Length: 124
Image (cartoon, rainbow, N blue to C red):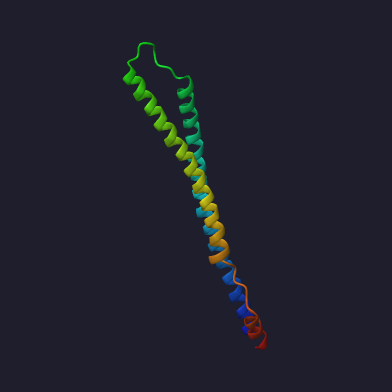
């Protein structure tokens, strides 16, 4: 009876330990997701401002053509950079969630006793 009680106590300790590991993984992944969400919000707002400048932002009449070319190249490159920033932030959040699921389902599983363990506990 003492051995069975000891085995059950060890199983409960293993369960608590694996639950702590799973909680740590969830905390780390949620930090990444929150950070990507904040990056995404800022990037979308900047992208909106860039689109506004591309569509409605006009330079004064009589501006030299080379300044207009530089202006459009800077806005175009900013648009592409911000669009990629939004894309990568969404991709990073999805990858973080997929990694969390993979870690939780494949590597940090709850310890379930086998039939041999249960038979071993029952015989003593």
